Length: 266
Image 1: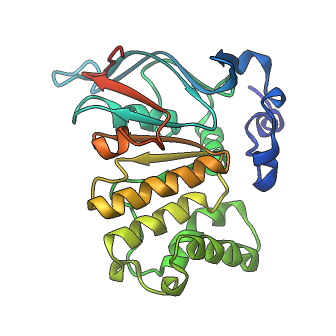
Image 2 (image 1 turned 45 degrees about the vertical axis):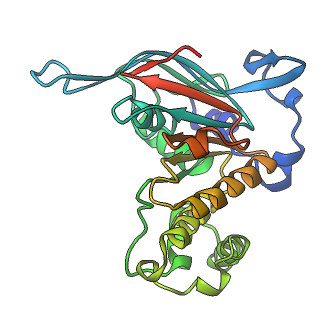
C-alpha cells in the first residue's frame, strides 16, 4: 500500500498565490499534451469507465458504459446531456464521491481508483470543492457557519477560519448577510453561500452539479460571472448542465455531451 506521506506529495493542493504562479512545467511530463500552440496538463483522466447500479439483480442499471475522457486543468468543462444521460454519475466519479464498477480514474497522472476510502476522503477535502444542485446547506445555521463547516476536519485555528469565511462571503457580496440563517436567504444568496463553502479549503478543482437549475436568468448569468473569476484564479471547474445559457457561455471552454451513459462524439 502506498505510504500516506507519498500521497500527500501527490495530492497536496496548490495554495493561494502559489496556484496562480505555478507553471505548466511544474507538472509531470506524462500529464502534459498539446492543444494548438498551448501546453495543457491532464488534471483528470478516465479510462474504460463503467458504472453499474444493482449489478446482478433484475433491476440492474448501467449508468455509464465505456467512458474515456481527459479533463484539462485550469479550464471550465461542462458535462451536458438530458436527464438520465449519466452526467451526474460521471461527476460523482470525478469528485471521488463514488467508485467506478470498472475502469480507472487518474488525478494528475496518478491512479486513484483503488485507494482506500480514508485516502479518498483526504483527497476530497483538500483537492475538491463541491456545489450541489440543492446546495445542501444546514438549516438553522448561519451563512458563516455553513461556510466554515468543511474546514473543521482540517483543523485550522478558528479565528483564521472565520476570517477566511468572512472574506469569501464579502467577495460574493454576502458580507452583511453572514449571520443570517440560510433558510432566510434567497435562492441566489443560498447558491453564493454554497460557492463560498466550496472554496473554504482553497480547492484546486471545483465541482458543480446543475448549478443554475434553481436560478432565474439574471442569477444564472451572475453565476457565469463567478465561473470566470474562478478560472481567472487558476482553478479547474467541472460542472453538469443542460442549460443552454451555461453550455453556450464564453466562460465554458469545453462541453462534453453524454447520452445513455456514453460520450456523444462532437
